[in-house]
Amino acid sequence: MNGAELFGGAELRFGWLIISDTVLYTWLIMAALALFCLLLARCLKEEPGPLQTAAEGLVEAIEAAVAQVLPGRPHRLVPFVGTLWIFLVVANLLGIVPGLHSPTRDLSATAALAFLVFLSVHVFGISSEGLKSYLKHYLSPNPILLPFNLIGELTRTVALAVRLFGNIMSLELTALLVLLVAGFLAPVPVLMLHVIEALVQAYIFGMLALVYIAGGIESQQLTRGRNKPCPT
Image (cartoon, rainbow, N blue to C red):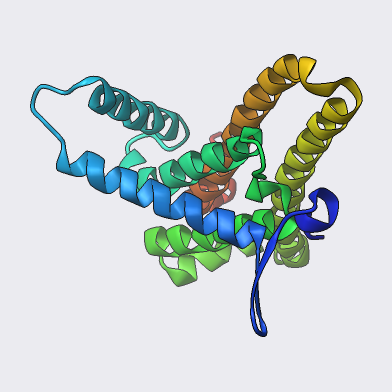
C-alpha cells in the first residue's frame, strides 16, 4: 500500500525512474540527521553548551534504556538502536509539518525498517554466539518446534511493520479528517496528540527491536538454561 494513494503524496519522475515521496522524505531525513551529527561533532567542547548537553543527555538516556534490557553490554547495541529511535522520532513527527508526510505512514517504509531489525537480530546473535550455537536455539527445547520458531520470527517481523504503519497512517488520516471538518481552529489538540503518539510509536518500535536483538544475543544462554537439569 502506497501512502501517496491515501494522502495524495507527490512523486518525482525522471523518465522511467519514479521516486515516491516516501523515498524522498526518508533520504531527506537521513541527510539532515547525518549533517546535524557532523556539525555537532565538529563543535564539541569540554564545557558543553545547551545543544551539546541535550545531545549527551539523549545518548545517556539511550544507553540506560539499552542497559536495562541487555545489562553489561549496552554499547554493542547503542549505535543501531539509538539511530533507529532518532530516525523514527523525526520520521513520525514529519507529518505535523504542513505539506509533508511521515514516511512511516507507508507500509513499504515500515516493512524495510522491520526487515532491518530482522537482519540485525541474526547478525548480532551470530556474532555473539557463533553460527552453530545460534542456530541451536531454533531446535530448543525440542527439534519438532523448529517450524513454529521460524514462523514466530516471520510473524513478529510482519507485526512490527504493520503496527507502526497502521498507527502512523491512522494518526495522519485522523488529523486530515479533523482539519477538513473543523477547519484550522481544531488542529491544536490534534497536533498535541500527533506529537505524543509519534513519540510513543517510535519508543515502542525501538524497544521491541531492542528486545528482539537482545533475545538473539542471549539465545544460547536461554537454551542452556532450558537444558540445565533442575536441582534436586
